Image 1 (cartoon, helix red, strand yellow):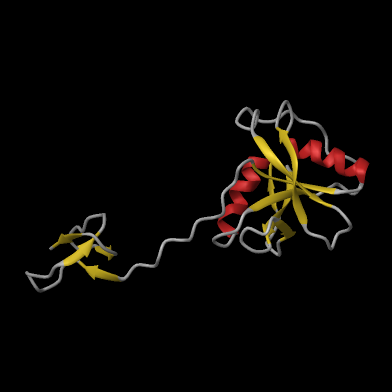
Image 2 (cartoon, one colour):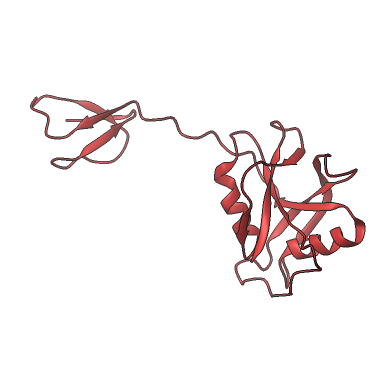
Length: 169
């Protein structure tokens, strides 16, 4: 298992990423780490992951899982010290035959610069869906009750979330 720390863009479109105050994630590969970090990121921002270096040497080599092999990532670089933001470089790392984060970790050890990864061509996180407008309880005593529903169905004794769309009754 590897320990990844979230990198989150400082403002929409800024191209500068800082270590997030969010909890680190432990997983076997970069794509899994990014999938775990994604739900914690605010709308309009991009994100990446920084693999924490081990205090005593490098992690033991293990081949990348089959689902990770061939995945490409944009490289984020933090130059100038731990208080500086990570920025996009012109580099791309590919997980083949080992996780791309391990190569970043090796470069980090040699260059004394921290490297993070983000999904190649990543778009900002979309806005979260709006909260439901209202809830209708089935079993209403009024036979002519109508509500607008966008999807789903109501069975006896259930409830449905009202958003917008067609007519249910």
